[in-house]
Length: 293
Image (tube, rainbow, N blue to C red; front, side, top):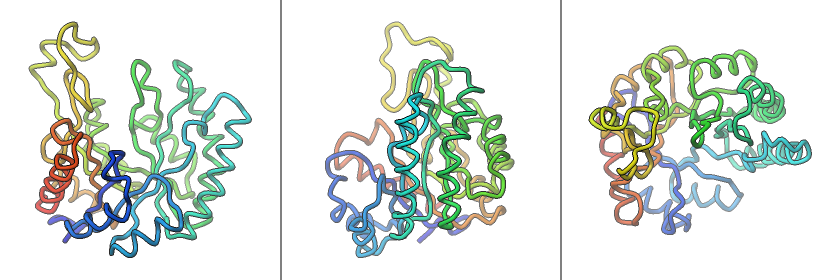
């Protein structure tokens, strides 16, 4: 059963906790719970068989060695690019078509225009390989760590230029409203502008605490208060429906743009993460909410 608006299939992104490491057990639980698909970090032939036998479809798979794709060391960068080109071909032969990545410069504090030029140069061969196998590279706008928040293609400025520079090739967006909300970018306006380039969607949300904004402001760390897990002092990532994202409107815009992919729950919520029971509960709450949106 998909979403009420658009009928989009609902998947889940495999997490990092102990109970999710056993893929046969995880996929069996996901299928029995009503999920349609699962996203994996890497993909092996054995993983592809496990997903299929569980009755799930394969969602996105991550590019590999992503920390070195933009390495300042030319040899490390070359090795990472070559490794990804080969991985794309192998993964595609095992059913992968959506290749997930974030564009995170390796260092700290480099001028963003210089980081951007390196990103275009480095991701070019990978995007070409993905295009040749008929897949899509999808970019998530995770901003990266503080204090620099160095990632590219998180805001309209660099996303717009990157899509222009690779026009005609199979590169697009992993739409995750949680990162846009955190950054103060209108997540609905963003989707209206870039909806035709969305090839994957994450079901994750962000709560903004206006009282905390008054108390601590937007930019400084608090002196005495403890920050949120999966967040900071004035914002935190949540399950869908517990934050600011307008999901029914999101789904209508996706539908208007002909989107036919999954909505994949990415569980990062301090109220649920940390135990097997809590994470299962968070995933099931997300599934129930997205079905009704």
